[in-house]
Structures are given as structure tokens and as C-alpha cells.
Length: 383
Image (cartoon, rainbow, N blue to C red; front, side):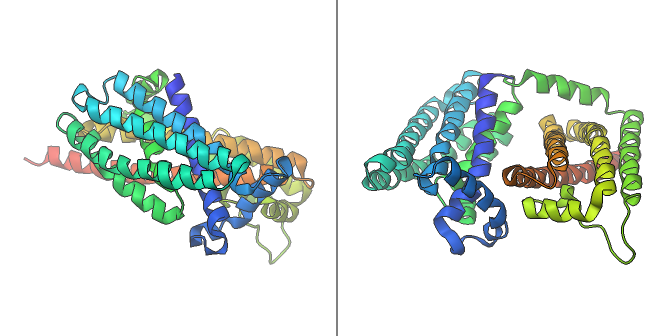
């Protein structure tokens, strides 16, 4: 994986992580409902910030982490231009965008770094007079860029044309700048880099999905996933529970959970239940592999027949990655019980939320691909 992809992914993950935190710091009890619903999880990270940097404000502690997001976007745009995903006909717009994001990054450094040491006036100058106007002007640039690129690549052009809408919508959702507006930009840049020659191993992975897209291969992969799912269900049924009681919802389905959730679940499971949960987790280390390959293969097949980008077949890879990370953290929580580290539990809950997001997206792709391939088959049969 090349540097551009690494920087862009780090920036995107940081932005996803920081956006709700900064929104809650800024809006407090007036935060969006979705943010308030996960505040217990967010407070765990805020408490960690206070412990590590007791003399700094939460606003500045987490705000300073945003510069890598701009670095990922800037270097990502540079590489997209270098590999001609941004064509030469869009040269001027590309240069303007690069300048605007450099200005925004400079304003961000004033707002979060300089202001903490030299006063609030630098936050006003950095954000209101430099960063926010640069982001606002980038909205128009993305429209011009989408219109220019769309003459040669309609799908890519539409992506850039829709980007300002998502930037505005994300800002209203989080009620915070710059994180809300920049998140869709970072996501798009990362997606474009991952589907380009900057990520050669993903090209090889798509080739593997092509080889696995036969009916027989997909059937065997689905069967393997079902066997793993059945084994996990069997192990779960073996967990002893008192009559009239039910097992609590597993950690795997508790997005943005906290240490209190972990203690509740594993206290209810008891020692024998935790041992069985350990083996469930071990099987769950295998389960996402055939599931990813099955959904990825059928999505690849559908996209190839529909004339869509086969990069969509890699979306289930996100589920695979986050599920493995989640399972690793759950194992750590089991070994730590009952002295569970709050930050580890909260991190596990955050990863679970990302995993479930990719899982729902993957099953949506699976259903769409099945329906689409059935439609294509009926179309071929009709005279």
C-alpha cells in the first residue's frame, strides 16, 4: 500500500473518530440526538484526554489531531492528479483546490495550535477568517471540478458534483466545522485512491473475487459462512443461564458500548459463559473471511454485468477488517475482566459501530446483486 493511501486512510479514520467528539465538546447538551446517544462512549475518550493532558482544554487536545486529515486530503489530491484520475483539463481547478486546502490547513493550525498558547484571537482569525472561507470556496471548486471531469468520466464527475451536498449535509448533522464538511471529502479521496493503482494489492484482491464469482464458488463460500454462524449459535446455546432469564445482547451488537456494558455482559455470562464466549470469538475470527469473499464475489459479478465499478465489491472488506479488530479487543476484554480498561472497552464499542455499518452495507449490496443478477438472467431467457 502506497503512502498516499496510508495517509488518506489515517486522515479519514481520524476524521470519523474526531467529528462526534468535537461536536459534543462544542455543543454539549445541545448536540445532535445521535451524538447525545453515544455520549457515554465519547466521555471515555474525553476523560483519557484530561488524564494525558491535564493542563489543556478538551477542545484543543482533540482539535490538534485534525491536521493529518488535511495532510491526507492534500497528498491524496496530488496523487490522483499524478495518476490522471484528475485530468489535465481540470488543471486550474485542481491547483485552486490545493491552494484552498493549504490555506484551510494553515487556518486550522492557528485555530487549534496557536490559539492555545497565544490567545483566542488566533482561533477567531484561524477559523472564521481563514479556514471556514477556504472550505466554503472549495464547495464551488468541487462543482467546477465535477463538471470538468464529467466530460470524460461521468461517474467520477457526478461524485465531485454531489460532494458539496454531502459536505453541507454532514456539517448540519454534526453541527461543527471543519470536521463535518471535511469528512465527505476525506471519504471520497480515500475511496478513489483505494480503487486506483495506488493500492495494487486491492487490484489483486479484485482479481481473486473475479475467480471466485462462479456459482459453485459463491455457494461454497456461503456454505462456509453458514457453518461458522451455526457453530457460534451452538456455542452460545451452551452458555448456562438461570431459568426465566435471557442472555444479554452480545458485545458484537452493541455499537458505541462502554466499560459498563462489558461488565454487564460478562458478569451475566459467568466464568463458563466467558470461556464459551472465547471460543465463539475464535470462530468469529474465521466467519468474516468466507462472508467477505462470498458477498464480494457476487457483487463483483453484478457490477461487471451492470457496467458499474467493481470497486464496490471491496466494501465488505471493511466488515472483515473491523470484525477482526473487534474480536481482538473482545478477547482482550475477556482476559482483563473484571478489571477492564475503560478506553479499550470504548474503543471496542466504536469499532463495533463501524463494523455494523459495513455489515449492513454489505448485506444491502448482496441483496441488490442477487436481484440484479436475477433480472439479467430473466432478460437473457426472454426472446
